[in-house]
Length: 96
Image 1: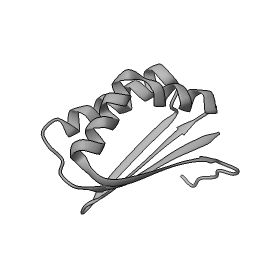
Image 2: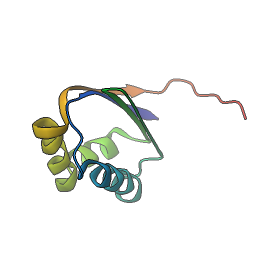
Image 3: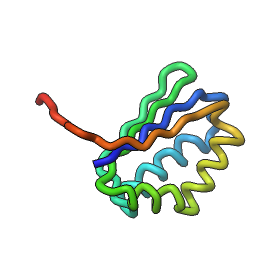
């Protein structure tokens, strides 16, 4: 299993941000096999973690035309900076 960790500094979230974010979550899960998608915003920071079974799924998601358009909006409007990390989950456990 892999996780994509997206961290960003928010510059300005306009009226299209929420609907775009919801669409990206739906698309990642329904078309590309994302198994879990969590996003948090606190102050001017955003952290999003998505979980995937394969690196091929992540690559396909990264190349999706709608996702590319959303990435462009992020660079131009919503974020002053961001970082993406693709990591392999070595162990997972949970309570409850």
